[in-house]
Image (cartoon, rainbow, N blue to C red; front, side, top):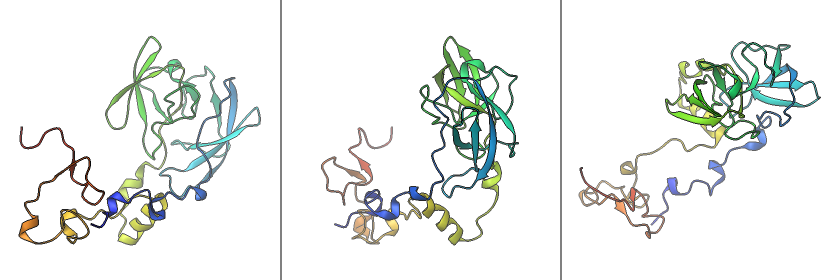
Length: 233
């Protein structure tokens, strides 16, 4: 049996992200001393949903971060300082009041930022309990993170990207291809019988079990793989 396309992901170059086209890593610097910084320029990254801003610090280091709403070239932003809260500041979560919008949030101290990095998104600080800070993520879920973790104050720019239609499939093709994602997703029942276990128009294939064993070969390991239970509750 032919291996379904969804099972071949990761083994072909058409599914790999073109990282050589990236501008650079978007991370906060590892230094922990308070200092000032300045936005030097903005850049476009082909597989990011938000523009990048290059930030240069007083100690000579520079890094890339997702740009926030209201950023402009020449704007001064503070780093780990106890100034009044303002968009663009890079602060520890424990030093920010509840209700503050933040993005590029660290999961562990000094990891550079892992959460909330897509265009137009931001998380909100809900409460602080001891050394833990509770955040409300864009998905609606709640998460608790150590207060020493850093984040950028504000909301990421390019929030209107989802409002502009693509008009034609070619635009969507080039966007998805730049990020190495799986698109378009063809329904299994619309495939031929040799391409997928659920494919084919014959009546005999309409009543096949959707479950498969953990020991099935790749071509048959589709659908509900080794489910704990089946049927209606």
